[in-house]
Image (cartoon, rainbow, N blue to C red; front, side, top):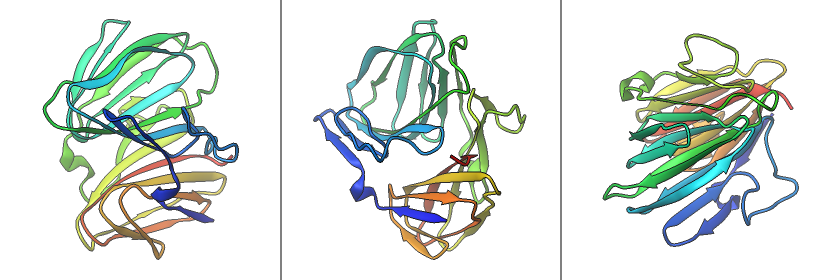
Length: 233
């Protein structure tokens, strides 16, 4: 089963300094039939203006991954971590029993990021933070393993949720396949570009819900893609 999601149906928030697309119910956008997809509870596509950002705020019992699309993100948290990340790089945070952090765009250009929240397999983990400065070439024409919850060493980020997160970058007319096995499902986000997924035409920011069905993707332009594979809900 494949369900195409046009980005025009997503929730929106325009605050001047922040322009957000909400894939699921978040903040002032609430749809009771669109709370989550499996353990994926939040996926926000945020555009943050220079000199602004999210001041210090708390999180608990959530696994959070942030994927930088363009610009620079500066993170600081209550555990003493401070890091600046740029295009294609990733930060992750197990909020666990409680952590506070800030996220700012101190650069001169707009910052675009995708932030994902996953429900942990249990509450009460010790808080943890890390980041990975992936080389762009690792995702060119192939699925780059980003994060997992099963200890698979090919995924450099390990979180407390049953997911496998991948990224890829395709040149125009390139194809790539992905197998969604029995009992599993996937959520695909076209970050940039245009493509066809099993014959379904997609544009920038569109998404697909995929349940127990293999995918064949063909880029109609250069395309940048994120895919989250997880247990079927």
